[in-house]
Length: 388
Image (cartoon, rainbow, N blue to C red; front, side):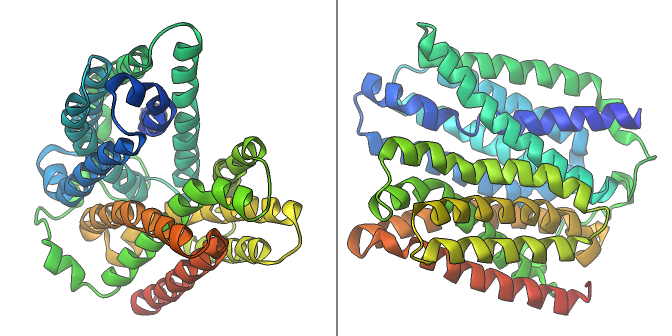
């Protein structure tokens, strides 16, 4: 039963990634059909992100009422309905409307599943599960591309992913009894105190502000690197746009492969050691981007930044119960997720302004400054929580 539940959780993480890159892959077709500026994709992304922040902050209260299994099932169902809504939309305002349940569903399932795994499973599963998210994020655009190249419209791409999510919802419905299993590592849902913490109460917890800033900085680095790597390679290193687009995928390849490898390394190293290792590799990667040693070194640097990012996100989440206690982990993880999405929303556009008004050459400097803050906050977190 335990292994069956774990398989369902792995499947759920793949499903988390499936819709994440759909908008980017379909938007070149969508904005022409809706006769809106290409920049309007940012509006939809912002609505989704706001919904995710709200549901992440509410995840603790919702989870204590319904439990992880029901929250996951309902959240996946909301995402499925939203995707099917996208597939029948014939105007931009309809996309904005369906983006609301999309964001609300995504935040709840992300926070609740991550907390469940942090409480019940070892660090290696957290790394491999986030690797599965990368697999899902890669499959989604492939399905959309398959629909578009097969003579179908972007609507069908969304419909296929929506139907996959509906199937997963049914699997989750029939798996609800498994979520009460007590034979996994850590505490069960029933052992968590029924009192949900407010945001001011969370902020007053020693180390909470530090882990929130750490999460903000991590997602700022990941999203900024993912969004602006191609532009940096083209405008600063003189690489062709076609080549840069291909090589920019090295960053995401580094994250996915790195998380698969991290799952094995966690048997030897603690979460804190894994995070420090990741931050060190990111530092080397950014240094490679800064040094004037040509295109090859820059490409290696981009791959190293991805590899360094790989263990940081899952290990921060997995260490949350250890740092703050199982009874407060859901509250902290919900807030961490909210900070992550604030970082995703705020920091990549900020670098866009810097690149536009100053120079895209500041890309590695920008990453380095964020990384410095992240390292400082993580070390302060370790100091306050006394976990080395």
